[in-house]
Length: 308
Length: 312
Image (cartoon, rainbow over all chains, first blue to last red; front, top):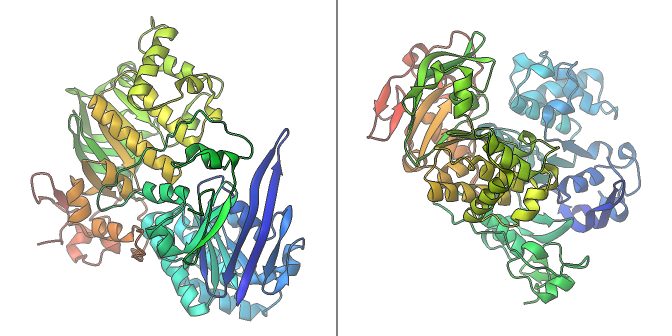
């Protein structure tokens, strides 16, 4: 069953003088129990997508179907409520330092009146244990926890109402690798035992391969490649994805880092493909910017040369 | 070139770097790798005495037959930027937003040579950028730092650091704030610098990929001490210390391997830390690990490990 379906999502940020086209038409869907990785470099619109789905900001146009109902244009609590939760990059900033760990986790259920107070307390205690925090931390102030512990707490808070979808917005980027691996382990546990779906936003390509089923690569407000995670990483089709994959530094074996400083005396116009200036195979067709969507073996690639 | 001997650094009473010994040879890239809070940045900054709150409580830092810990501030200022240059994590923040990049290049030279002329500096800068395969020099020189992308800023900062052709470059997480493609370009540039100028580098990073692709030698730090030091090949392919092994297993890879977590959390610094800092998280730890800091053991000429338990 399709849990989340996003079609034609666009968003423009208005500056004093000009417009920033953050999203230029995003389409994707997440099935029940699926983990979709959304990868791309900073400024490509990953977080904007997440915030629109979580109803934290408004979109310009497009529709979002969540759990069988349209949620576009509605307020957060009314439409998505407990079924969609979010975990942020900096866990410390997403907690009120005044409260203890137990209170902070219980707060995740505050708006929904699902459980009685004793029930809620018990649930919170179980979850804190489940995510791997010590029982002795229960009454500790949330500010005294380390970054990794805090991130586990924010996962416990997100799970307390048994949501259907959790959005992880760079939730592992601020952590050390050993702690990052703990969070990945926890996510796998949640996925297997509770059947939660994830939208996993990250800039770390290698990380997606250990948890995601599918992966969507974003560039400049568009999804340029979408497909099964392993296949996309092993055999990228879009020139940008190729460049991205070749930039990941492997720990065994040296990689030859290609040079991306492609210089072009461009006849770059507003219509040109966004990737035109850096694309290894750009030509006149790309300067005109006729984007084609091609379906190749269960994947979609958005490229001027997609047909070839 | 640089010889750090039994260095200890403290913030107030808390000792954050414990008995660190490290050598950087001519034209060698050495990486210090470790997780946050392991003291790697503190160790690096103390080479140029950049942190006023940190006090060096023991050991020596020998550079060019001089002990840096014994120099006064004027003498250190003569070394900074001229013989030893530093690159920071966020180059953009270390640049003056009211001055153009061209001025930055000029300033770097002028700080050590009052008679320098701006035109000559820019000419030299342009040659240098060409040699390092950085293009669009004209646009860069007339831009302000905020007009450049993060990756471009970082690469420009590296070029600026090379203006005085220092013998040693210190870099504190030079790629951590960047996207993967920009990160790859910075690694590429640092390699190019080494090839063109035979500059030595001491680089602090938490990224094993950077170590594997850039370093000649790597030192793994944990809880303020070096746990293992050896050639990059030794560290990546035949690690000995339990922490190094666990750290490498925790790194996510592209082939879908599930990263293995290290149980527990990094240590906090206490005044009276005895024994091996990794012992509480170590699966091989014995009683003696909690009581005594492990002895240095040489596995080969270039490979040294500080551990009581492994491969005995």
